[in-house]
Structure formats: structure tokens, C-alpha cells
Length: 200
Image (cartoon, rainbow, N blue to C red):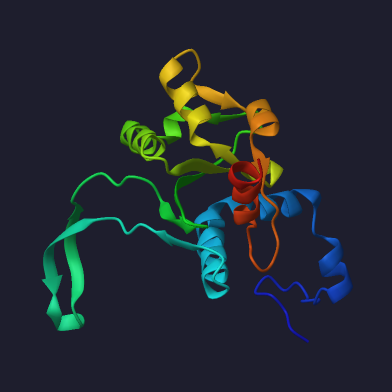
């Protein structure tokens, strides 16, 4: 017999009881944690698309300037700083067209806050559109477990208009495309790109 230090007897929880104790709150938190893995899901999806030669999309590396390296532990960077502002998260090619997009998530159920976007990102995406590229955002509403593709022109409009500090959820429902989630690929976002920009 096993006892705790306070003398109380240890009784193991049966597997059945353990499963039944999972609350609705636990399930919703688990679903919302997917937002923390949005970039990982896109990266894994990109590999899937690349392996099947459907599209070639890569994540931009963040440019850093290395100041100090500790070679005593196998060349470990101990001091560095960001060289310049990054543009957007991803770029690549699909069906001969250049794609450029930013991935963001929000815990709001009603809107996407524009404070999540930097001015230089807006300027970059405007230039992509100017030169004939396809520019968009992939936005995840964590608590709804919904991911949308929204054309960059809508985001640029809301950002520059100045009347609002956010994009209402209804805009995503009306103008965006809901991205199907699965196992392989994790995100069927190329299907959304196809529907938005190629099926006219």
C-alpha cells in the first residue's frame, strides 16, 4: 500500500474515470492552442505541397547580424540583433504566379486587430500587387478554430482608411475563404488560393 506523506492512502484513477474528467473547457483550450502552431501547420503543409510538386512556398528567414559566437560549445550564438525589418512570412510560386503572404492569429471572436500588422508589411504587399503578384493574409481565429484566406487589398483598405482599428469577423465570413484543416496537408490553403485567384 502506498501512502502520501500526510498519511492519506494513494488510490490510482482508473483509465475510464480519467477520460471522463476532461471538461468542455479543456477541449476548447486544446482547440485554441492550434493558433500557437499556425506557422508550423503552414510549414508542414508547404512541405506536402512541395513533395507533390503542387506549389513551392517557403518561409522567409529573419535576417540577423551575429555579434558574438561561443566556440567552446560548438559555435553557439550568444549575441545577435535583427539586421532590418522583415517583410512578410511566406513567398513562393503556384501555377507560374508569385505568392506573398503573412500569417497571423487572434484570440478575438469578433475582429482581427490591425495592431498585429506593421506598416512596412502593408507597403511590401502593396508593391507585390503593383507588380502583378498575389498577396494575401492567412488569419486564424483561435477560439473559433477557423482559418481564413483574405486578400491583402481588404487588409490594406482597413489599415489605411483609419476609421477602424480592426477588421470585423463578418468581413472574413463574407470576403475571405475558409481554409479546410486536415492531416495531409494540415491546411488546404492552396485550395483557397485556387478558388480565390484562379477560378474566375
